[in-house]
Image (tube, rainbow, N blue to C red; front, side):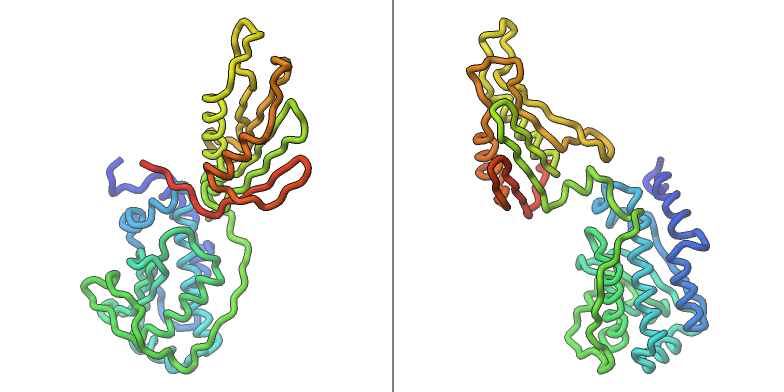
Length: 318
């Protein structure tokens, strides 16, 4: 497949979440069109956008739904300005500058956060989508609304390269701009990453159960943590010399997660069942490893369990 040909996952996403007539993005576009009384043209260079933002979406099935959700938040912000008549003068200016057709070009932000600029050349808005995970729809809508209300009072975008211009200009907002309170809503399931991708992001949660003498269990949301712990324990575990096969004194076993794709683990057990009775299993080595090596922070402790949390992301060294 050539680099310019989108994958099947991307093509299916465009079909289902962008082109479909009853897709939420097109419902939002129709609402703006009805309020303005002119056609609304949404333009996206999918190959370029995937090149710019694709690394933020390891699970490519969430890429198009996320772009659609962010674009919908922009249209909803525009619709809110028009419908609530937040700034009638702004609305008149938009109609005057747009002429008979409003163009909305969707691209990637150059400064990381969501941006909006007005292009005099193309008579339309250039929308820069944020990098990383998409914020909640209400938060993004509020952000886009504020940027929209600023776009006619700040410096205008040069037609040659709109994406390189920062819109953080030092000018006053229109008097009609007010702080907008928003609330979080549950996200659409189509924009959520797979469990194996979701759990690679902090916070990481880890629980150690060790009330007995023959079993210690470690549960963790971060599979690489368990894999590293298992490697360390197996490396330094003594040999059971009472068994002619000389197995490890403690059986260290990783247990596969029932969720997501690929091989991920959510549980580790240390057991001495049917082995040398001279050895007991203690959680002490796990506690030291978790706190001193991996820098998990203690959350709570009781007589037989320890709960930890880590808020700093583990980076993969390539």
